[in-house]
Length: 248
Ligand code: IPE
Ligand code: IPE
Ligand code: MG
Image (cartoon, protein in one colour):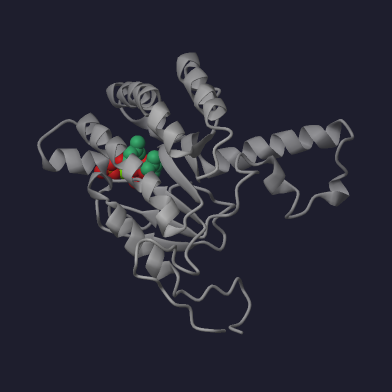
């Protein structure tokens, strides 16, 4: 294989950079605690970092950005934190709709909406509709998302299609199941970044990340910048992905 070159100029997308980057935005709570502030202070600071990263995608060459905002396991937190996060999501969507639309971001949500309150779901649906025609960057927000929950919900729908005769069990293969996942319109992530020093995936994009490259970095999410994002995407370009084969 020809060695890949990395462009250092920020105007040109690097060749061989990741097309789809997924981020586990972790460390908001610790960031706030370090400052002697309540955890929600960290969540607010974290939400503010999202715009810069989204807006840096086109110049870095990232077409799809998927961010983990709330997991199916995060309901285990205190009522105060969960309610604060839900209110932050409502405020974030209301506040950011205009800038995301003007920037040309197409926003999608993945995760189970059933447990979310109606007001929030309405805002999510409206944001998706308002940005549906945009093509500059695809931003997917995982909200009440869990990889296992997603596979379980997908399997339920697949089983319903079998029960109603729409799908023959003999035809179920690796191409069939992803069509039932929340991410059915997205390519698989090439690079998954997790901030805050934890080296685990915490139920994020389990099926989709089978061959993703991972970067676990120490930076806490509220300190994450577009410069660091750019560096991680550039170093991705020199990795040798083999997908189970051998180097050509
Ligand atoms: C990530 O930050 C944001 C959410 C999970 C909602 P955390 O809240 O997990 O921050 P730490 O890990 O406690 O520092
Ligand atoms: C993963 O972070 C979920 C999000 C970033 C939304 P957590 O902080 O919830 O994960 P664990 O508990 O450290 O595994
Ligand atoms: Mg955490």
